[in-house]
Amino acid sequence: MSTPDPRAIARLRSRLPSRVEPAGPVLVTLDDTPASHLPVRWAAAEAAVRGTTLRVVRSVVTPPPVVVPATPWGTWYPWTSADGRSPARAAWDAARADLEDVVRQAHEVDPRLGVDAGLAQAGAASARRDDALLVVGRRRGFRALGGPVPGTACRAARRARLPVAVVGLADSPQAGPSAHRVVAAPRAGEDPTGVLDVAFRAAARRATGVTVVHVPGATLPAAVAAEVLAEVLDPYAQVFPEVDVRTRAVSALARAVVQESEGAALTVVGVPSSPRDVTGRSLVRRIVSGTRGTVVLVPSETSAHERRG
Image 1: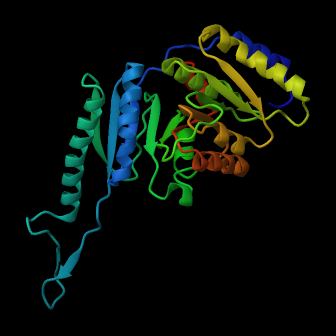
Image 2 (image 1 turned 45 degrees about the vertical axis):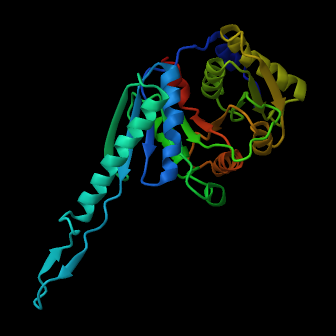
Image 3 (image 1 turned 90 degrees about the vertical axis):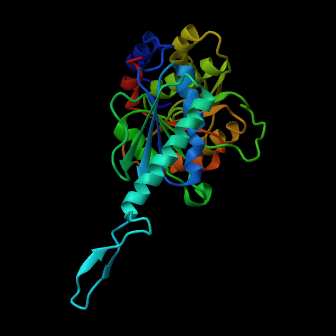
């Protein structure tokens, strides 16, 4: 937390968070890799427990046209497959078949779930203003390459102004300090309500507690920082009395969040509000690459978006 502003603290304390999720579907975006199907069941379960619909967008990579010279004079004809289909047509047909399987997987999670599935050209915008959550998967080699953060997921969170869930499963689950809890890591110096709203609602749905990991400002003594944080968390204690709350003040946020997230139900992290915040992007990258489970990225701009609920 940075130097406390009495007016800002009073504003946060007077604002009661809502238990109601923002209206809108849960959007999951997929590509043609098998690993991209991992988020489908997670997104379907999230949509079902929220009482909303699931929107699936499967991107299609259209191969460039392949042509061969048909005559010595250089007349060119497009290449087609043995059954007469062009590479582009074959790619779209395969994507449609894949999409049918994705819908089947979603209905295995909840047969009553409403699913809106469609195809889109790779690179086309997927998120809409009415979407409540964007769900993406981790590519193979995620840890070695840094995954889609901040290059994809972080940008998506800022541009769409909604939380982005990067879905992953622990390959060897460990029982960390916050096992089965929701870990929340608001960014120092920024409005924490977006992160806290997502974290507390997720904890209430999962009947678990919240661990808030924060970095006290350099100008604040530890006791003062703890008092400021308590003021910020007081409205959440009123609205979510069943959610057990723990706080942990640390000096190295990324390392502490990774430790706390071992075996956690969910990790919620604040995304830097400025794309030029190199330090913030590096911090998010380290957290997501070091965390085995699912991480929800919440930009500070989502505070207004979340309050619509």
